[in-house]
Image 1 (cartoon, helix red, strand yellow):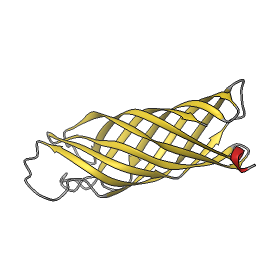
Image 2: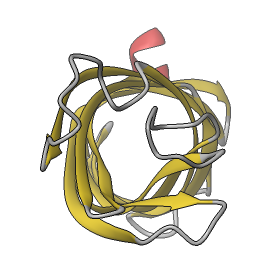
Image 3: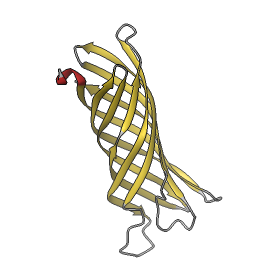
Image 4: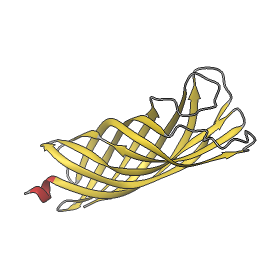
Length: 176
């Protein structure tokens, strides 16, 4: 039935953000927090299409300016899952996200401009590995280690050719 081929879930993700550039710019990291809704759609026995939406807090420090930007991420990922080993299944997934800026906070805001400092949209590449523990039927808890890296420039005023808003974190979720 279709119900067994589709699962939905909620998750939270504490993470570490940093900005990388292709020059020797002074950069620092900050703590972020993501949360969202995921949906797994069965493609074949061990392959799923995973999508949903995620509220993502990204940023970091660059040249003594702190960027804290909230994006709405829309991922489309392929998830490869192992067969069950006891109550456990292991997985890896990868794919792009399109991210749209919701709001930003820049400190100190001494640039005195009405323009935003971050890009209004990003293209992000996601890579994750993780495990899920079955609670019976289609219900499971899962944890994964993820890395997100935008492949389009993240900031407008970084005075570098490319500023990437990187993120690494731990996603904890509940699927049903």
